[in-house]
Length: 196
Image (cartoon, rainbow, N blue to C red; front, side, top):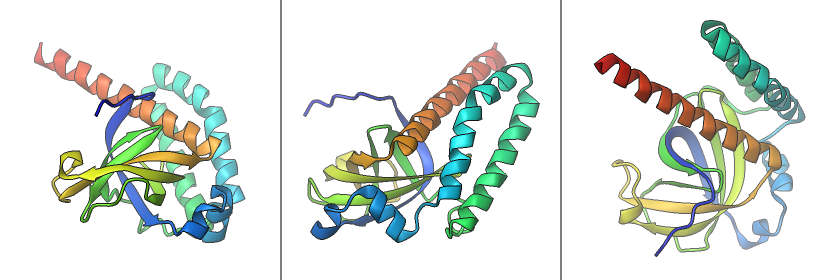
């Protein structure tokens, strides 16, 4: 099977929870399910929107004053934790990654203990680090098999294509992936410099 990818893919450690969606739930829009489950709040979305608007400024500061940029980023992380707590999600249970995944803006692959049938509908709640940004999506299983494993802690790997994701969450995911790629390239360059 030949795969076509529209987005960059990274391996990452995130906090992931997922659940199978019943047929009647699949008919409900994602925003309605998110609101009913208490997975989002207006305050959290407003804070995330402010962070997105300020991201260009933060990137400019990062180029000129990396230490100050790290300090500002840590303040953002604190605010995100407070917002998660205010939204009713327990930051203590989601403060650490629990899955090693292969992630792109169009889907995710992660480890599971039992295979899932193709086209099985899932609701995925992902917390990205270090921002603690929560992303919620509906996905459809593409494949699950031992060959899809992305970690050694689960016997089966499952590939899921995002079917429904809010524009804000999609933008946050793309930004996260680009940031991680930038960090890894910078680390690789630094290793080369250190070797020389």
